[in-house]
Length: 94
Image 1 (tube, rainbow, N blue to C red):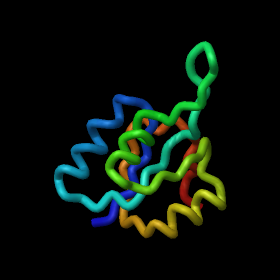
Image 2: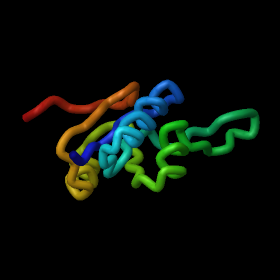
Image 3: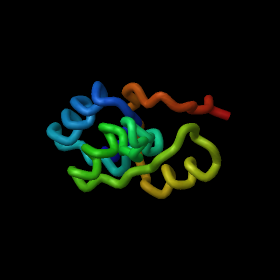
Image 4: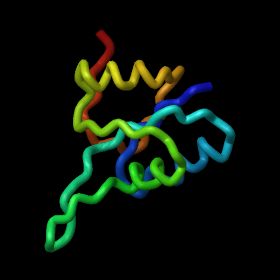
């Protein structure tokens, strides 16, 4: 089963790891864009984006799911999505 994982903070990383460890095919990760952190305001990836990069999973950055993001998600070809503390806007079905 192909899964899109949507998450951003560190609390979502164990869920991503569990899906991968269980043998699911996580085809992409949807997460919030890199954010400036610290006194120097250095752009830093979210914990989920950092973990996805370590795992070699494609990353889609978005604060809300619009038409362009929907196309990126469709291109990844997921069967289902798992959402854990994503923090962005996901529109309802139309």
